[in-house]
Image (cartoon, rainbow, N blue to C red; front, side, top):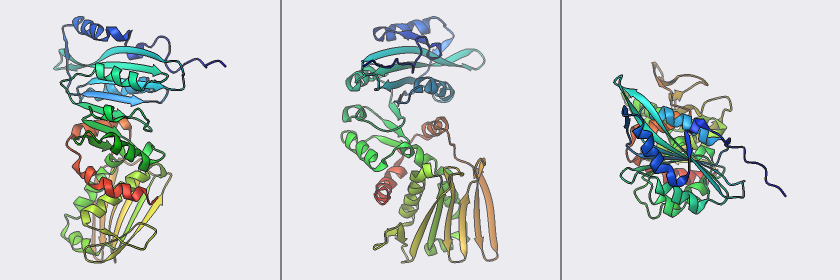
Length: 356
């Protein structure tokens, strides 16, 4: 039996920079900076981007080039091909530079690793050896989780960025993160699925600044959310946020999502899928003949907020949430913080996952 040739990364790959041996990475990085005195090395964090998708190194290098215009970092890109049985390791270095004040280039280092075969220990040791120990570690894990996400690896992370919408079994994957983070109580978890709900959450908060809407908040009796089938997690996280923030209790004796308000009102929930729509198409809150709705059409650059009541109608617009992974990560890095609200809704969301 012969092993198929590994064609994920070409023998020569200038897009990733200069190919170097592992033992020469630090020396070659120093040489890179010595070549041009007009370059300034800028780093505010270590950003590790991990993927098992073929071709991810090239895609992520382009993403890092754009991200570093606003977020200075030492970027460490990792692509692992475990379909190749023989262990292998290749590495490249480069710098992403951006002109500052028309004179000096501000540059961020990038180290790219391509590993094959059984890699758990080699991956961890390779990444650990090339972190800037004085800077926080932001770890962007792309795709399904695997046994490589160990307690030892998570113990050194300050922030873990994921996209739960890409997981086949979100409940099991969140449990894997919880188990791996037992020794890291300070870990900040950021989920693209949660970030996609920002403008909808902001829209609801804005709507209920309106006195007319405030009066009907305790009387809400129905919630309707329309979402793309690939983004059910965003819909459930939005629903969990509503329930937590409004103080709704789960209503016993129902096999679907249903709540009871603080005033004792029964609240029914309807979830619709729209394969032609964006991640979230609409959130509708009804209280008798009064309705508050947040909507976004496919391809639209804005979200519409609307209140409808007898003799009263108000409409406003806000920008749509970003959709690409690059934009979502840039937004998450820009906001920073402890992501305490997501941590607050996470148990309720995970409970909802069990009801799928």
